[in-house]
Length: 180
Image 1 (tube, helix red, strand yellow):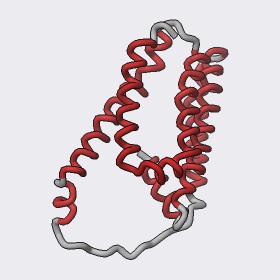
Image 2 (cartoon, rainbow, N blue to C red):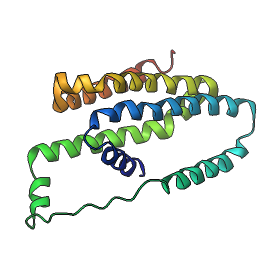
Image 3 (cartoon, rainbow, N blue to C red):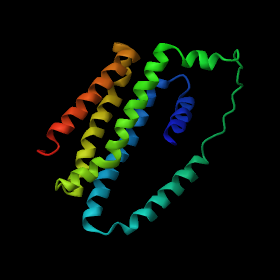
Image 4 (cartoon, rainbow, N blue to C red):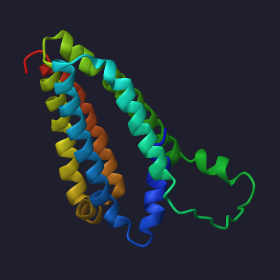
């Protein structure tokens, strides 16, 4: 996946101001909203044969824009051998990685099949795009206030709350998807 590398580059670029990340990242969410609503509507009014070509052009643009990112070399310090494995075996790290893996597995099915499910339920492609946008609007709101949330609650509590809210989302989707 490209996103983690992109985030590392962005955070490195922000240097001593990592709190600005969420304000910068929210523009990706705005772009996603425009894309899903626009593409949803285009799918309704035209054949999707154009989609691979537009995707290829966008990937080309991403590649060209990546060439403008300045090189960065950092001296790496070697720690004691085996430190990575010792860290990876710590209970908090194991719990964090397990939660992250389970969350990614759950989202994999959601990202792959939710639009197909909604279309089978009779939703128009435009409405499906709008429904995707609702979640992203919530994400934008969180990005706007994230710096204050981190100061007020800390990373650990925010991660726990995020996992609980994700579980609640799956319950709600399972309960109301057919009555929206």
